[in-house]
Image 1 (cartoon, rainbow, N blue to C red):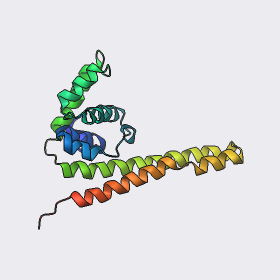
Image 2 (tube, one colour; image 1 turned 90 degrees about the horizontal axis):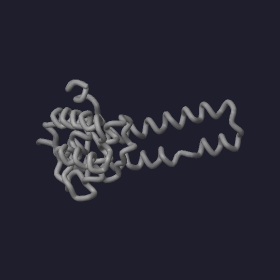
Image 3 (cartoon, helix red, strand yellow; image 1 turned 60 degrees about the vertical axis):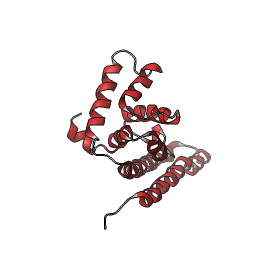
Image 4 (cartoon, helix red, strand yellow; image 1 turned 90 degrees about the vertical axis):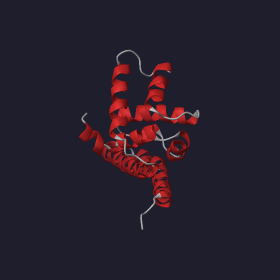
Length: 169
C-alpha cells in the first residue's frame, strides 16, 4: 500500500495516530474501542496488540507492538516482515498526528463500524425474510444489540471529541 492510500485509510490512520501517542493519551482514546470495530483485518490485528500494550501500561510505539506480537506468537515467521513493514509504513505516514486527530478518527471509525453493523443486520434480514419461520425472523429483527452498542460508543466519541478539540480564535 502506498503512502497516498495510507493517508486516506481512516482505520490505518487511527492506528497510526495511536502509535505516536504516549500511554496515557492512548489509553484515553482507546476507551470504548474494540479491535473488531475495524473492518481491515491487519489494522484490527494491530489495534488488538495496541490495546493489550496500553492496558499493560506501555507506550504503543511500533517496536513495542512488533515485540509484543512476536513474544505472544502473533507474528510467526514471514509474518514478522509483513507486520514490520505495515507498522513502519503506517507510523511514517502518520507523523503529523495529535491526540485531537486520534479522537476525530475514533469517531469516524466508530461511525463506519455502526454503519457496517446496520448493513450486516439488513443483509441477514433480507436473507431470512424469504425462507425463515416467522418466530426466527422476529427474533432476528429484534437482534440489534450490536448496532445499539456501537451507536452509544459513537455518540460518546463524538461528544468527547467535541470537548477536546481546540479551535484557534
